[in-house]
Image 1 (cartoon, rainbow, N blue to C red):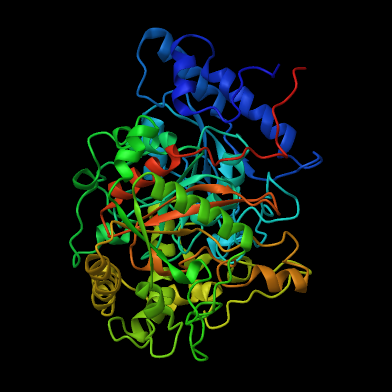
Image 2: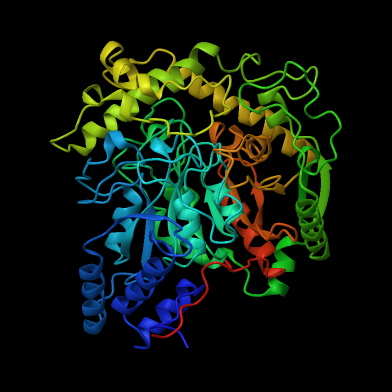
Length: 578
């Protein structure tokens, strides 16, 4: 017997059905999630997962309003009354929006981010905001609220240390602290926590989900990333948050005038839930005849990978990915399931990564390729990002803080006592200089930035040449690979031996590193299984051509139907009745 309505692992469709039948109320659902948060998330509990860091004081009123609407027969949509969480990088009117940083701990959102706005209009109930490192400029580093821990194991991280900043969203969604979570990604901050928590995650093509009202990190890369426990839930959520947004401020790719993007309504299907197969038979039909490539570099089958002594563009990029045997075993099982359903799986090179990172002799890098200039790449992480942060503050309009120039730079990302140095060598960390940049390098608008057009066009051309033409040549419908090579130890922030393990390529950041986000490659990550030796989950990532998002969603949903690969977290079981 459980306390109240059983929300553990309960999908959106079942929550909605219970509301419609009068078996529960939105208030009861909220209370059930809050009870789990009180039991497993708070300081002093046995687990102290620390995923929920800003609670919504209006959540109960929102749930009560939903119940009143339902009683009148006036529900606002399919998510009316469904409680959820969002990352601390989302504006939610009236709540603070620290983005994990002490410098912005008291910044108050004056409006909603687009995704929050869509969910609020549909009657969904925001429980609160989830943990993240300062400004999402990392993964598992501790910010103003500390960090989230794994609901699966205290010995392992809930996300990649180098890039997994939606760590609170991953933990909260896996632990059933809400029906779903909203994450965000710049490198792999949505994919990595999804992999470590047996979740589904979608990183869209540029402009498909508006990022207006989300704190930027690097505006050419930032995307909204939904976290759910099933593909059915993911598709339900997308049906609500994928919509045209007439306001482009704060969403660089939709705001820039040079590269023409399709609108959200041109990309999305009439119904996202209709993309999912109804059963295993329909899943086999969806996979039959599909040709998918698995990069050898991610399955220990590419002897050339990581052999360029001068390779890499920073951090561990360009180094060999050594995938844990228990991850390989899960991949081999996934491959068998794909092939049994009629898909053709071929082992391939992966030029979009090799030519970005120069991972082997003779391969260029993004720096040397000539499609994107070094000057632009420096401008992108300095001038452009600083301008975007400042514009975010100005657009929000908090009277107490509306200009980045007024921010104490030393408080943006202060290091923690005893914390080992990060290993991002080659990636210049300049965010502490952003207040100075906006003072010394003012820009009136995007059009006032001479390097921007050339850089954006170069990024798009890089993807076209190294991914899309390559996929065309090989006749691939998608690329598929283990989301990570391994998981990092929980103490790698203070233990050198653990840090050596957690900073390896394929572990520090999810597989692909910067490439998917920098080049606008859509991905869908789904559970691949749980490692027999560590008890930690691993995801399988489907990637493909820009704006073939629906193909990837269909393939991922079909793969999910071929077997039950999600395990529930052992540290957050159902609560006993009191």
